[in-house]
Amino acid sequence: MSAGARDGRVRGDRQKAALVELLEPVVGESGHDLEDVSVSQAGRRRVVRVIVDADGGVSLDDIATVSRAVSAALDETDVLGGSPYVLEVTSPGVDRPLTAPRHWRRAAGRLVKVAFTAEGQPEESVEGRVIAADDEKVRIEVAGTDREFPLAGLGPGRVQVEFRRIETEDDDPLHDDEQIHDDEEGDGESHGH
Image (cartoon, rainbow, N blue to C red; front, side, top):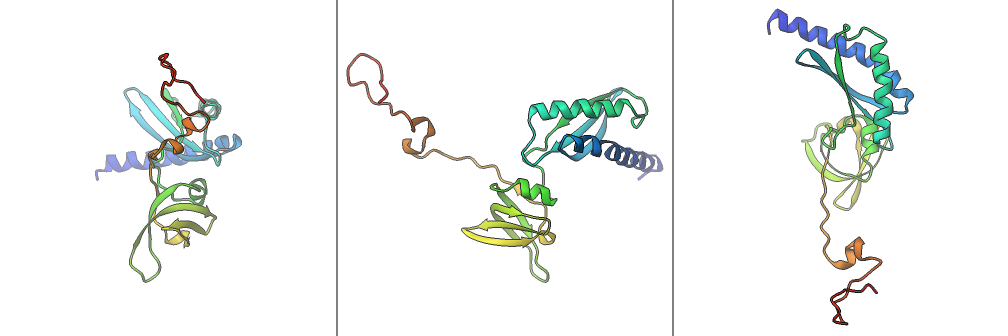
């Protein structure tokens, strides 16, 4: 790595640390967690990307509120060196790795895949549904069995996208209140019963 690239990386690390220090309390005041912040160059402007999350999820209204607060905080300081910027505030996607205890708590009820390593044992790939989590352990239902894993032994977990196929009309929520029958009266209309 060249000296120029190393200097740019150090400046970027310092800038990120300064942004985290500035924005964590601003985002926290709205009841959200600052998950990540990054700065990239887009032409003459910088793009500041702020990722936020909360226990109950993040709504569009939440994003707008956090965006206004973050924008005001950035405008009041020179952490970006006074250069113009574009602010993007977003929630983490489903592909975000589960690494912190709060990530695991928020994944309760979700299907996850994770590598687990117990001391002196080979790595085990685990897939199951998160039941609960705290600061030290995660409970996952694996193949119908409730198992407890120390957080320290878990690698980054990944939420698995699930697509549920409706097998029969009885399982179809659109048909719970109303059944559609063939046109018995011959008038070209179906009638609900």
